[in-house]
Length: 251
Image 1 (cartoon, rainbow, N blue to C red):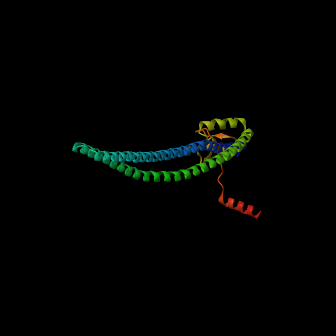
Image 2 (cartoon, rainbow, N blue to C red):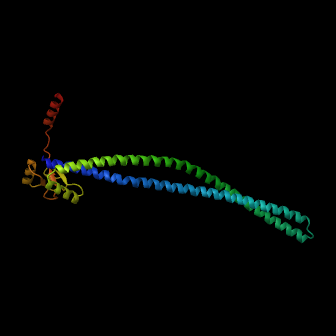
Image 3 (spheres, rainbow, N blue to C red):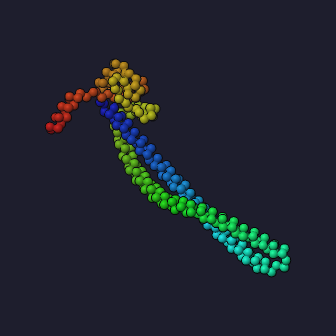
């Protein structure tokens, strides 16, 4: 295989790895933003539960204060009722006392309802606090892992780009130019293998004479259908492969 074709294959492997690294580096901040957004949503939910619990407690305190006011009023009305001058005044005081007692019962019923709600709210807040603490720890671990992965990816990217620059400098200028042009026009796949007389990228059959020239491997050749750089690997004879392996082991 020609050195330029080998370099083109190597360049394509590097370009694929570089693209993967760039995509991963770009995706990690998005991942961090996503988990932070979910954490923020859960934090807001906990704050809403806490606010609902605080409102519940404030309402219960207000109702207890209302009961105290009504009880004081009832006590005063009873004192006034003892001083009533007529049946009409007595009945009026009695009616007003019954009204106040009804208001007390309403407040007590509402307090019982708020107490029932409070139990559920307290359970929600306690469960949410525990879950949120665990989620914060998980988010911090993921952020740390993402930062570490980004640093590793950036180092690999720098190394691969340096390796690519070196390989590109060793290629024939015309072949490199063709490779770059084809890569951009063919979604990164500029070099492909000819298998069983076909281009493995576009799957079009190669002309017999063209395929014979490709097999000789004395010049860079391009698929007549899709324009990609073609290379050919001769089939490996199983017996010869086994013999070569055995000789290598003995050596």
